[in-house]
Image (cartoon, rainbow, N blue to C red):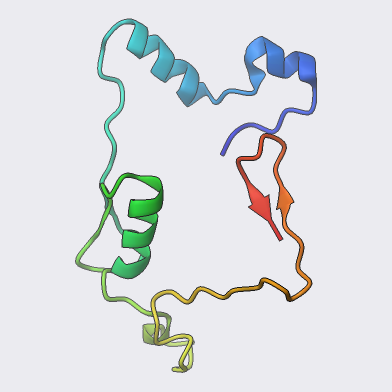
Length: 111
């Protein structure tokens, strides 16, 4: 997540950038490989992983074998239902009276 900077002057002076962004720029100037994308994730079911991989990471992420079939219903404290038996459920809230707010730079949305 980006830093939260409420001062325009501080943002102009570079405090709106993460230390990782600053370091990546420095290593890029030196033409030195500083980062390597980790492509195996260990938290999401394969369906969710594929969606986020395609939408955000150019299809480069894969789910680890240990989690790729995991569902909420598999957790001991979660009851089996239609919702917990699916890896991902998208709910269209259009027309339900929910408004969507856009972040300061338009990079984030909430409702």
